[in-house]
Length: 416
Image (cartoon, rainbow, N blue to C red; front, side, top):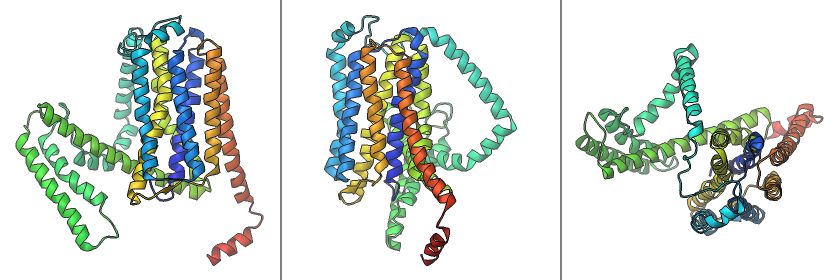
């Protein structure tokens, strides 16, 4: 949505999708290869084919070069279609799934956490060890230093995000947060190029809402405990969720600005940073959670992990990128949005489709068994894709370092 950062957004989403569908699925397949774990064929084909369909629509949008408001809404609405397909498949396809998978039966009406009892003790032990490590870190000088660094970011968040947790409840902080949150939104979305009257109007509206919310919070809450009523508690939770999303949006903006600055400083295209650094950071959580589920959850856990590796990117592309396109079109007074002119996006999409086709061809031929053949192939495809992009970027860097025509470039820069 930012000016000049659309290529970073696209590369980050596609880079994260490529990392999850190739690296995460590949590592899971290699790690559980000796356990003879098989996944649901119909569910796997459904998710992979729908992801391929989503990427095909995205390629069409990039080739066409622009998208209008209704096109962005239609693209984002494909996620609703995917949810309907999954629900229908889960309701009417259980018998077909049992016939396709002879090694085990999966009942999708049972909560996904059932069957993970074997790994429960391990998880508790790991949790205790992690708790001890965190305690050691907090008590160390490094932990104190990190805490000090977090204070400038923690205090504004604490003063603007309502917290209704029983253990962290504080009526004064709750009243302050609901009072300052509207003022914070007013300062955030105040048009900088607007007149003084517009600025005063925006801040006046924020102040009026803040005082109103503060008085209501003071009158309807207790000192000892947070709100108990479902309706009242829901309002507090919705407010906290909205403010958390806004802070996430602000953090993402600053992160993108930092990536662009680093790209300009070191002569690296910001898009390559989005494809690698930002995409890897966004996908590490998927790697840890899905790998843990596959290793400790047995066949059901592996099924959930593999499904998440394809359902997650579908959500990120259709809901995340789709809503961003909708917001960009709406912000431009419902005008069409021009797609980034980055030829490497289609290259990334090509390797991404190659990884999906490899999975959809290899896995059924091997009896839907997760093994090193599937995982190794996916890792090789991802390494080739990233290596090619890095070689292209490093070649450009080498050209900048050598600068055979450095005097001419200096003169042109002076003239600018």
